[in-house]
Length: 351
Image 1 (cartoon, rainbow, N blue to C red):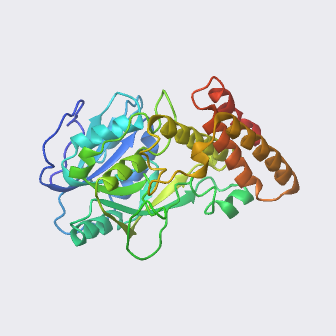
Image 2 (image 1 turned 30 degrees about the vertical axis):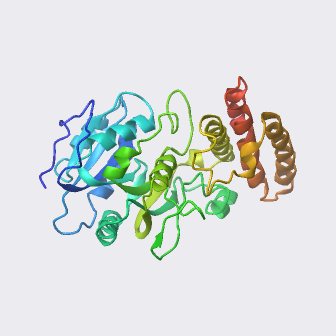
Image 3 (image 1 turned 180 degrees about the vertical axis):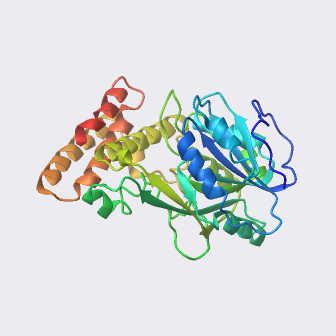
């Protein structure tokens, strides 16, 4: 395929037609991360591709003010890259722009802070062809700690609960298996793929994901939930791997607290907006925390704070789980209140 030039901008896609003749659109959303983007594009340029694959790499610029476009332009002789811009801020808005602008029959999603394994895309293409009945696919996300000086406690526990989730660590094993919300066999946002037809029926919720007006999680899980609820099936693709780069700023207790605070706030948001129809509910059953009142959340957070302080003073690694619980219950309890920003700003007190 002839590489599209980055000057082929799409500023307001409103496509409602069926996907075009390309087999795959790789979609990356980015904002003011030109240096990181250059590194992921370099890894894309080294992919081992199936012979004759018709594909594009679509980069959605969510209102960058740095040299993002110039970086993309510099890869136009190495990749079938296409630049498009969505100035309405918010990750879900950028994702939806990419969905409507894409030309492929399948969308392969990844982030601007990963490195692609050489067979990342080839493994997906093989799975698409092997499972034409399926619409959702997911692969491995393996954290790679950057900076060389991570705390010993972080290195020891970063692939275990509760740190694994903030690292977006996802590894369901070496065997192909059906995806399912039951048993938490679902992909994460740094590495998943969706058939475009189903994706256009299940766009990303602008009230989820990171934006200037809010920080919430789970916009990709929410979209997958709605697709699978409507009957879509999916497969785990163990051969598709990305390495998620974890900078020093995320190798901290403050980051763990912040992540779980946002997880709690997201839970409260789904409870308020879609109490009977969201991805936290599997087979019609509410998780036990879902029914907690604000004051019960606060009481639990106080208990978690006390056990956190005691465990950390003793050097007991259970302080990590207590800190995660503290963040979660404060996030859930303070959602929508005047205290929400005050509590999230406490994150710097845990270092």
